[in-house]
Amino acid sequence: MVLNRREPGFLRQMVQEVHRELEEGVYEVPDLRVEPPPGTGRLASELLAGGSPGLIVELKHTSPGYREGKLPALGPERFLEVARAGGAEAVSVIPQAFRFGGSLKEFARVARQSPLPVLFKDFVLDPRQVRAAGRLGARAVLLLARLEREGGLTSPLAELAREARRNGLEVVAEVHQEADLPAALALRPDLLGVNARDLETLELDRDRALRTLAAARGHGVPLVGMSGITGPEEVSAYHRSGADAVLVGTRFLEAEDPARFLRSLRPLRRPERERS
Image (cartoon, rainbow, N blue to C red; front, side, top):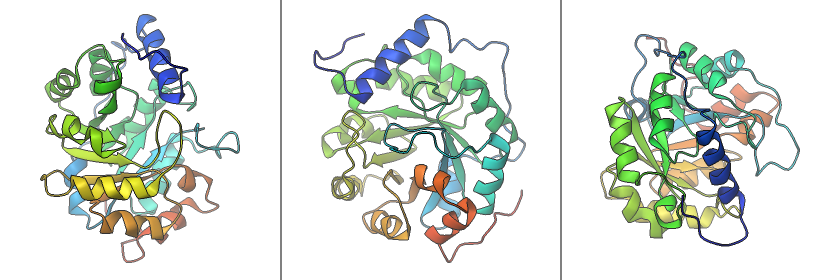
């Protein structure tokens, strides 16, 4: 592990925590294997097939960018019910206990029941995490392009992407700024996510995200706008800048009526997806 020497921000803390978990064997889950339900589609194709923009809904129980403590409780079964009722094409689950309140077991519960493709949205540094994602029923895994530059990976991003594909997983490469686009695009990802939140400082900069989305257009990779979505205005702005899909988490979870909130993001969409 190589980390730049500076006072650790949030992302540095997460990298250190994941390395501790790797050393303790947290991701060794040989007795836990999940097959997605029959008919579960691929992440990219589901997002593109449903019209624009596609919608990914995220499950977490707390968040470093959330100032109100724990998010309202939403178990896996209720989460999936609301996601479908709100018209989501895919779901994202953060299987990280540290600062998010998740777990690998919870991820497996979602993947076992979800007719929608599930994104393994951990802080992936090591092939062991990728293999765990495959065993637990994920359809895709997220890789942070900035870690190629900043350090903390046990294997290069290219090797993590190859491991993902060996395990039948799609690759979602995430960037925060234009400088990381070359590293992300070199992975030939199935999707490229642009996060408005800087994971090190936790600052939110939607304007930077819009510029980065615009710079990422034209490379033949579907784009996802991530973070900072409080209503249809942000969704429209991401879409105009090139996003084929958006990911929404905190605002959805804290909404009084989460399904209604999701429908409000795309008022012309069906209120509930048809089952395969």
